[in-house]
Image 1 (cartoon, rainbow, N blue to C red):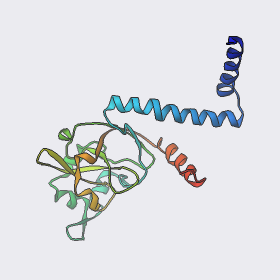
Image 2 (cartoon, rainbow, N blue to C red):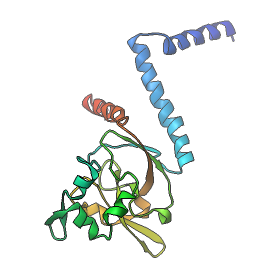
Image 3 (cartoon, helix red, strand yellow):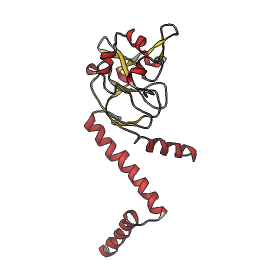
Image 4 (tube, one colour):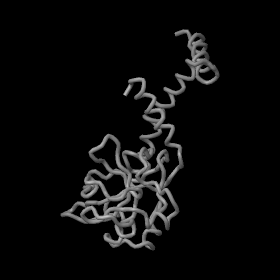
Length: 208
């Protein structure tokens, strides 16, 4: 083997990837970054954080608070059989009062485009008020707040609701622990728009 040619070829590749300013070099860098993150960084974080989804981008506005906490607490909700009420009334029906809610993690919610770091907290240690990610009848996992928890035989079942929503969706009424993915432990504001934009671009050009 001609090691001189190998070394020379490697230097050309290195220069092309890290120093060349051409569009081709930028494209290769994007692909390389995607591969490294998806197949090395992401699995490593999943191992450390004990979950299959260590980092998720928030793709909906269902956990946003449009106002301050006090204003949100008395904003519109739907209770019982479709009767109008406030968020306070809704949570009161779940035995959750204002002071309790103020002690919850992410009590002011979070926004579309945020990045949330998850930890694979065991189902038995999930508490009312925790924000969890779970699988549902939708393409993307859902990230909402736990409003109730019960044990059926040896398994746990959760109920959730998005802070911004007026009520819980039907698929949130019964979330078995098998659909639970992880608990949100850290918010990184707006960084998720990178993923949202990238996915939208791929969809627009017909790749996904």
